[in-house]
Length: 86
Image (tube, rainbow, N blue to C red; front, side, top):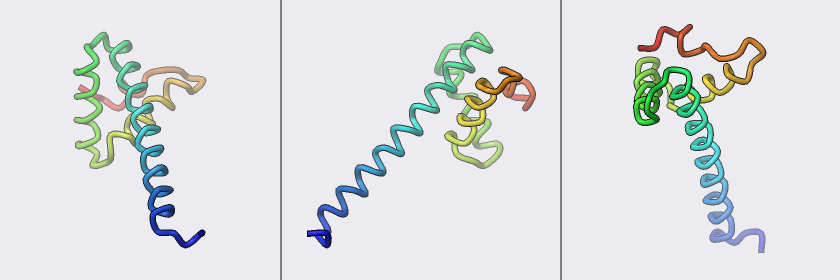
């Protein structure tokens, strides 16, 4: 039973879907934080995330996670301004 490729494939799909959902949640949180901090529409906040990710050649998730972490840190929000985002 443990060698069933379909069952193994199902586990992989479930894992991938969970990772994608987790990544999306972080991106949505970061978009909201940027939108509030910079008084922007959410679409513009996403564009800033995307632009910064491209500039640094990292995934949007990496940049979003940094934004969320900065907002949760004791020093508070400010990552976006400190990084010199547009």
